[in-house]
Length: 101
Image 1 (tube, helix red, strand yellow):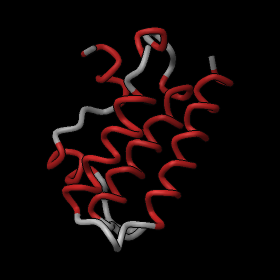
Image 2 (image 1 turned 45 degrees about the vertical axis):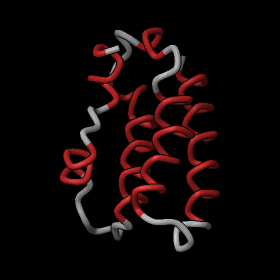
Image 3 (image 1 turned 135 degrees about the vertical axis):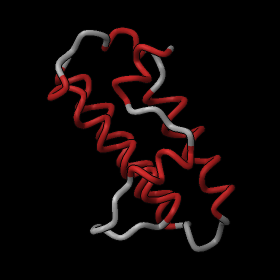
């Protein structure tokens, strides 16, 4: 499963890099909607019940994807905390998303 999780994370980071290139052309609301559709719904939430019971170290790459997506929505710098952004977007952490869906 570790290889599967790493492949999902790599695909998500590819899409985030593509979305980052056009962040100046679109507003925050549209950027959040695009990230929600391209990354969260189609990659992180798709069949994530298979990931139930995995250790946190295996799920860490997916959490990094979610943190990077929230940082992209709010254009955070590397030194800023992402937790308030996740709360503002009403996004559960990856571990809780697995059990919520």
